[in-house]
Each structure stands twice: as structure tokens, then as C-alpha cells.
Image 1 (tube, rainbow, N blue to C red):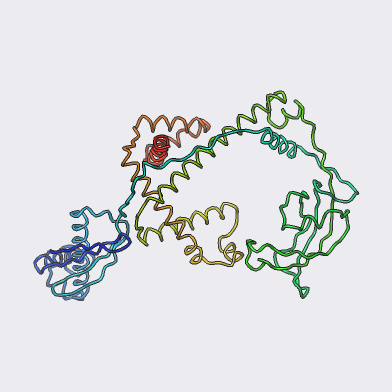
Image 2 (tube, rainbow, N blue to C red):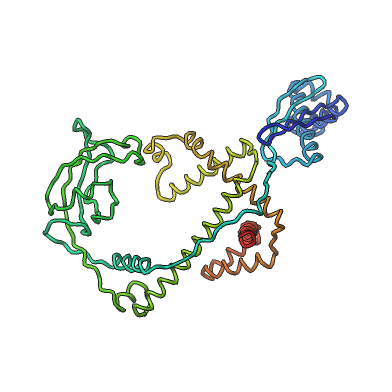
Length: 422
């Protein structure tokens, strides 16, 4: 066997292999052995059929194809192993000649990362502060959740909760699909409906009707409605006035399940906000560091890897939509798109994800960041502490199967890397 290897663009290599007649003969012998096990010929046991007999019952072309398929499999594997090629895709094989038998395999390999001067990267850490306004926003949200609504006969105003029937029509007066709802609940001023819609309901009383036009935003989720002018007919079915609770110890216990003073509540809120903002600041620093790494990185990602990652992103999206109880086909129909269009849309993100993984692996290796089994087991105990005891055996089982350990190792490695470089 003779072979040559040539580097191509986008981290692909071309392997040209020529197999001489002597080597090919060994694969023909194996082909006869394989096929003799698959056919049934009267008077012979499977796997013990003489070659001459087998040739009378099987098309020579079929034997020839199987022998050459074996030759390509074995020789390709030998080259990849010998040259230590880190292949990341299935090879695309074309036959170059029959005599001597030669073929060309084009395969994607793990991309080489070029990263210069990454140690000079400096990321400014965001200072974490909790303002009085932050605390008041949480208290306001708590009071909103504790608000009691009661029917009122007066005109609706912002802050009221109303139930409304509505339907949209085009310029010709034809009813538009997916624009109709009955007894639709909405708190005026929260802007959960199309911009401007809730403003049109302010001032209306129960049983009052109104017609008005609304122009949908240009970036609206459904293409058919982007920038479209729609006439709505509405009828108020109910108006409820919100009665906000008084902030006292009784209300605090009701909402939090804990007995505490107003000052204690504010301290607890401040502590939680600080923890959240600290985590957000940490994430921002890590993201900023990664962006700086990417600017200094040169790497060619194979199309096959990008396609695979785009498929994974699409699969994530399908799971998310299914988790909400929606059919993916109907989602595509409503969004007026196709899987192919989404795949094309996700390719830039897919390529970036791969580049991030590759460059982080490079830096981890350069910085000699490693985690021990003891560190991984400590992290496992920490994770188990967040779950009921009855779940611990399942977590231990996943760890023993090897499904959880790589995830924990990866998480800890990244954590140690960022602690070091930031």
C-alpha cells in the first residue's frame, strides 16, 4: 500500500491510497469468507463454502465490490492511525482507478488553533453595587404578587386588570387568523400586548366596545404581521381594581414563609441581589475574555463540524418548543420558515460555538489546568446537596456510568481556568 496526504482548506485533508494486487488479494480472501457466511447452498455449511462453488452462486461484481470496500476500510484506518490524524467527520471517498486499485478520501480533521499573545488580555471586573432602587423593585414585585383584584364599575386605568374580547381585521374587513381571543386577561400598563393596544383600553368601562387601528412592529415574530396595519374590535368584559397589600411582618411571612422584620427583609433582598449581580458580573467577565480570545484566534472550522453543531442547535430548539407543549411543525408554519432556513440561520452561531470550544481547549492546555478525581467528587457531593436524598442514588449511578463525570470535569476545568486568567 502506498499513500500521500495533502492539506486542504478549512481543516480538511486529502488521502490518496494505492493498493497493489498482492494486498488486494488478502481482502478478496476475506470477502469470500464473509459472503460464504451469508449465503445458503445445499450440501455446504455456512462459512465453509469453497471459493469455486461460491463464485457460481454469487455475482462476481458483488464479490469485487465487497473486497474493495474492505480494502478501503482497512487501509483508511491504517493511514489515520499511523499518521495520528484526528478526524472529526466521515470521509468522502471516490475511486480514482481500478488497476491498480486507488481511491481518494477527503476528511475533516481537528482544526489547528493559532492564538497569539493571549496572556496580554485584560478584562476589567465590573464593580457590584446594590442600590436602594434595586431593593424597592423587588419589594414592588412582591407587593404586585400579593395584590388582590376586585370588580369595579368605573373606567379602566393603568394598573387595573381587565378581561377583553378582541379580534383583528384587514383593510377589507376580513377577519385575520390568530388575532381573536375571548376574556383575555391583561394588566394595563404591563405592555404584554402589541405596543399601543393597552393604551386603547384605558378609559373604557365594562361592556363598552371600541374599534381602533394598530400597526404591528417591523420586528414582530410572525412575518405576515410585520409592519401590518390591523383594525381591532374590542369589548371589555370585566374591570378589576388592584388593592396592593401593606408591607408588614404578616405580609412578609405570607410571601416568604419566614418571620422577619421589614429591615430583615431588605437585608435578605440585598444579599440575594448582590449574589445574583456578582454571578452576572462574573459571567460578563468570562464572556468578555472569550470575545478577546476570539479576536486573537485564527482557526479554520470544517463545514462538516459547523453543520453538525447547527443540527444540535436546531435539536435544542425542538426540545424547547416541545417542552412548552407545542408541535415543531406548527411552530415552523406560524414562523413561516423551514428547518433548512433555520439551519442556515444558525450556522454563524454554530461556527462561533466550535471556535470557543477549540480556543478554550487550547488555553487550558497551555495553562496546564487540570482537575483531580478528588475535586470532581467534591463537586459531586455539592451537587447532591441540592437534591432530595431519594435522588442521590440516581446521581451516583449516572456518575458511575461515566455520564456525569466528564461534565463535572469540564465545569471544574473551566472554573479553574477563569479563576487563573481573570
